[in-house]
Image (cartoon, rainbow, N blue to C red):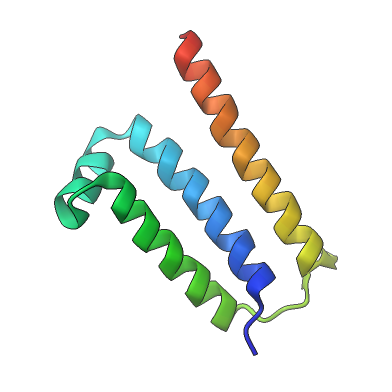
Length: 93
């Protein structure tokens, strides 16, 4: 049985890493664009793959001692906060 909470946790963190990484490392952004025709399409496909893979492989019901549902909620919020903070600092700099 798949654990979609773990998929959400893994894919949200991976998306934040891809978004911030693509802005800080121009070759990453251009590689995504070259392979997938646009860097956002590349991020979508990679994050979808991470979600499916983590959901099917990572079956633990707890993550760092808390339930996987709460871990998913926290990882999504922290990933969104990291991307928002990055763009605010990037905009102000």
